[in-house]
Image 1 (tube, rainbow, N blue to C red):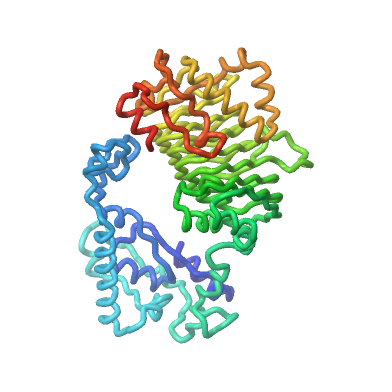
Image 2 (cartoon, one colour):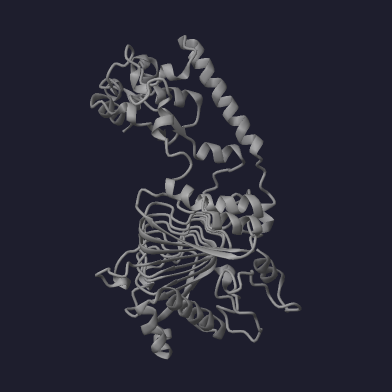
Length: 477
């Protein structure tokens, strides 16, 4: 695909408007040199970077039993993690040194002189003959169709400004969109952040080219007050269609409301605050039957409250470790790799629910009894709601959802609660089996229905509560 993409863009005069990034199996400086000669300008490392920091490729990431503590929530395993940032840095220094040796061997002093130079690639007959499997294999066809760019290197520069590097033009939007900069520059917003007190509300229109909206604002808050030190309240209301990563990295005290729809990765890395997404007032569709947010919402979220008056896409709440979320249905792989928090779905979900889920609880409204065949039972279990605490948690979250979104589906369920509550499945991993929300118990606990209490402070267990060490640690987290 790399050679074809480079060739097609170069042939059609579009290559100087695109930066090509390649990844997949890249391990060494030699791999990068070959990728560059086939047209790539940026290079992604995945598995090898994990190995450099200590991963042993045990392939049990989803079982919470990683022997070196890379993908585990167990403290006794996490203590075995051997990696440091210096290990990764050192590895890339060696990769860079290998590339320098290859360039010196070829007689080039600048790396960009290798990009697109497929004429420097020659198949080795000695290597082809080394094993019988490769006899008769011809590799030349993989790069013979790449246009010769030895004499014309203009594709490495933008036609808008030939003196500038292409990436300066391609990435001219900087670190965020103009909308994000406009939000952060509001005088009332700046005042609340600086004084760490008071509240303000601002309103904006949004379009789908506005990506990572409110990420810059969250960064402004974090630079001054850290993850949880902000005591003010900033309410940002939007109307329109939001681009990817809407509400990324939202912090406590930042409340976002969108009337319209949003793309993928809503609430990515969310740490606190609130995100509410509702259809436009003039929308002509039934909210509970229509998608309103895209895929991978709440990816890696560690806190906060999320409410969507509509369906979500695939991989909803993937790697969620603390957010409390209510949606009206979701696609495949809901709650994948989830380690904490609570997810409530008031509508149907796709297949592979709870795959790799090692923490947290999911509540799924299932009047048609279709969830059982869609559940990934490798780790999680399901049951009807048994404990009064679990019922109270679910009901209060749905009530909050109705208050925030005006959901007709939530209203219908609440108006016939005694009957409708029996149609919910509670999905949980072994780590939650003894939770009072899952198991019937006489222990009195403080009900947790939100990532933050109404006054904005984090919820803590009562002083003197008789809890085991695991419950205490989970509360502290």
